[in-house]
Length: 309
Image (cartoon, rainbow, N blue to C red; front, side, top):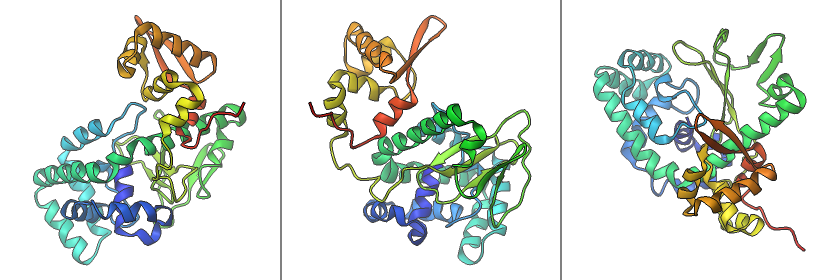
């Protein structure tokens, strides 16, 4: 999803002023051919082909997302291309018609383009992007626990409102009722989105995409050494342990990820847990450790500095 947003920012930067600084640097390394192909698919705004949007998950990685794209259902892909075609005109429509003529070849070409553009544009920025997304999720979770679900929904965007037993999203170019009974509605933050969007056609899980909060013009800049700042606050070992918990890890997995002795990793995890930065839960025969919303917010803060005195 973030890659599609990044492509849109490059295709039509005038609509994405918060990303102008990132766009200036990205243009120097963007592969033109693959970007052109993805640009024809996602356009500048509006409908985004469902086959490009994997159902998000806490442990979804770019590699898994790419693997799913390489085996995307060809019938669904062709339906999506048909939707893009009727929303297109001129050269873009001609390109989409060519893509629809050979779905299998198109799937391979799109996946190859996705991989190349990802490696050039977003892979270098992924740690910063992931921190922003996780911090947004943590903030929303805290608001739910403190004020309730309806109050949180009202903070997502001006387009979104909680009314009765439904969530209403104002989308000027589209009108649809999505039944979330039995599945629920998945909320998906995005650094690159400036408006909200929804996915609801079966078999896709109903999803609401919204702009993550806390995004500024300098989100892409590494103004200081993030690890050095966190290490000054927590100590090097605990900083490494906290930043390693991108996904739930056991004590031994944490030790390996941080090049620490298991006993040392266990001690750091205990201190971080006591401070409310890490949560530990038993899963079968092991204990898995993950960051709490406060831990996510701390890792996401690139200007974290130690207190004087």
